[in-house]
Length: 86
Image (tube, rainbow, N blue to C red; front, side, top):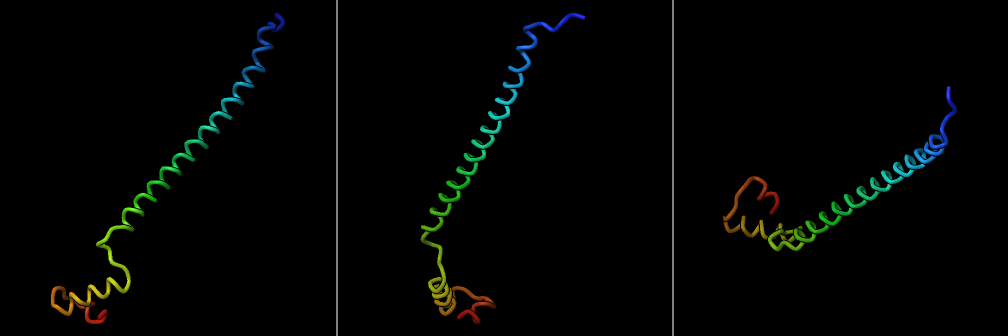
């Protein structure tokens, strides 16, 4: 049996170091993509919220009730819940 070559003994520590660097790189990449995915979802949700919150045809609370009751009293709309609402 021949003794291990000098080249082989130096290659093993380099391979181990490279594997640790690869796993650290993968971890960094996962965190990076997770952060950017979260950022895209957050910004997209915020844009949708801003667009719909400024939508003028949406009615809220007392304003909505007043509009519905006015339309019910003039006969434009009708339904079983309108009488108890107004």
